[in-house]
Image (cartoon, rainbow, N blue to C red; front, side, top):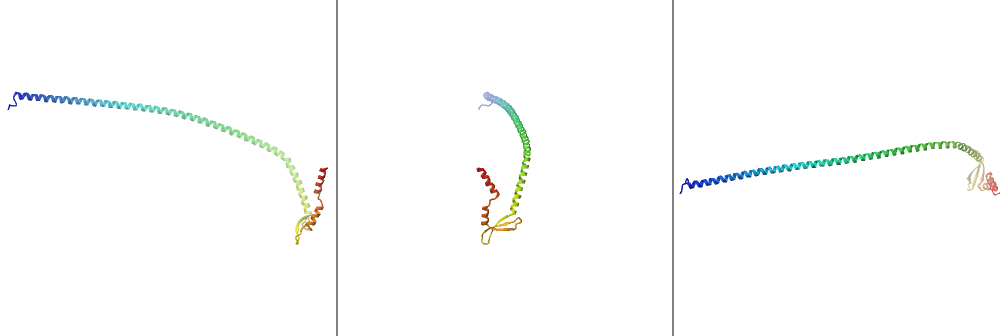
Length: 213
C-alpha cells in the first residue's frame, strides 16, 4: 500500500478538491442565475400585473365617464321632453279655460236675453189679459144669472120619480119649499109633455124653418 501523502495521492486529492470547488462555483453560479431569473420573472410579473391593473382602472374610469355622459345626455333629453310636454299641457289647459269662459259668458248672455224676453212677453200678456179678465167676469156674471134663473125655475115645480105599491112609475111634483103638490103617473105626464113644446124647442124649430127658406 502506498501512503496517502505520496505525490500521486496529493495530486489526486487536489484534483478532487478542484472539481468540488468547480462544482460548488457552478452550483453557486446556477443558484445566482436562478435567483436572478426568479427576481426578473417576479419583477416582470409585477410590472405586467400593475400595467393590467392600471389598464383596467383606466378602462373602468373611461367606461364610468362614458356612462355618466350618456346618463346626463338622456337626463337632458328627458328634461327637455318633459318641459315641452308641460308647456303643451299648460297651453291646452289655458285654451280649455278660455273656451269654457266664453261658453259661460255666452250662456249668461242667452239667459239674460231669455229673461228679458220672458219679462216683455209677460208684460204683454198681462196687458192683453186685463180685457180678457173683464170679459170673463162678464161671462161669469151672465152664467151665474142663468144658473140662478134655472134654479128658481126648478124650485117652482120639481118632479121626482117614484113607484107605487103595484110597481107603476110615478111623478111626484113638488113646490119651491119641497112639499108635494101633485102625483101623476109617468105615462100620463109623459104623454102631456110630448103634446106640449117648450120655448127652446119652438125657438129651434123656428131657426130650422128660417134656414130652409
